Amino acid sequence: MPRVGESYSTSDLSRKSGDIIAEALRHPVTITQRNKPRLVILNIEDYERLMRQSDARSVGTLETMSGSLLAEFEDAVEVYENEDESIRP
Image 1 (cartoon, rainbow, N blue to C red):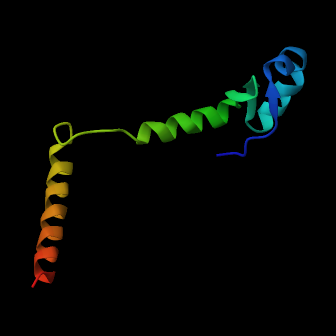
Image 2: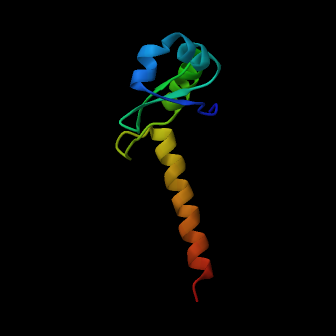
């Protein structure tokens, strides 16, 4: 992820929007409200890269896992159990 650059207040955004947008085209810019970060402005390439990366990560359960992935998981658990049993006295 690109570094987050300057931080601007919402009133700065009203007064200096052109400068802030120009900076956001180079790297993400944080917008604060009452001294707390509230928004990040970033260029479309960075946004699209983040969206592609987030698509690769998903939460699932054993019930929603594909059959082949579930079989791999079960095999790995079995190997782990067998290794653990061989260590026990």
